[in-house]
Length: 273
Image 1 (cartoon, rainbow, N blue to C red):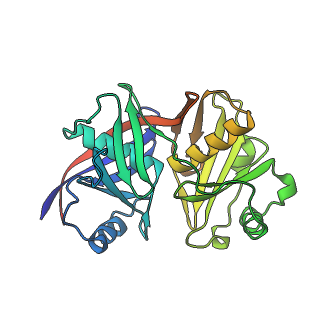
Image 2: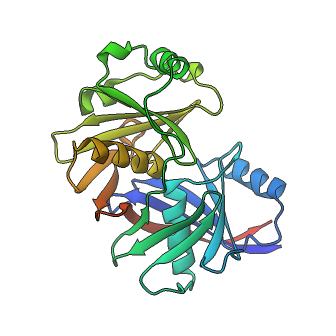
Image 3: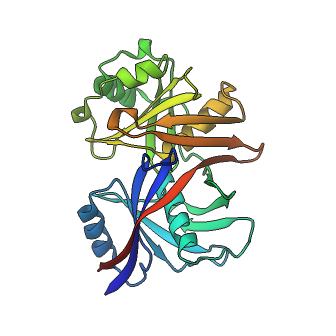
């Protein structure tokens, strides 16, 4: 069956510098095995499939797949899927917001004419890393925890082990031994930046370093705002170590933390699935 397809750049700086996302617009009727097979074939960090919603409040439903498994939530697939839905004629029930249905439930999005932003979902796990995961992060970083600034769980569907280092330079210089990470281990690094951005971020999953990671930035923002170490509005960057230049715009309106970025359709056409 021929289905509409596009590839979207998410969290770029205005060019093609962010994280690419494959989107199948007509996902209804595909079984999960076919979705997973196509996501593996695209060889991108994530591929999404848009479907009719099952909840009356939602505008659309999305299923999110990495090359190896399905995720209940991810940030750049949320922005990229909303962009693709709008770009191909989707009209929100509420003109002020878009409501996405996914594995973690309903996720709200807003569009200001330049950027899309999603409301950061609640963390399903927070607090300091346990001893086993501290040891895992130490082994992967080759750096004792005494050299870290802080650490915290950031599980909002993707179970991020967040580690704050001394500064952005430390984040950029860190060499992550991905052989120490298991298939489902997610390591996020964050460090204060003094060169135009509030923080530099890196996200590593097993043997993959993600170019720009919305779910990680959502948890980082909740963590840093909770500690009072960042203002209500700031911009972070990610991707320097994989040849990208992502920009993530964070806004805390006092009730929700919004994670925003630019989105751009780069490829559009059809796919046979």
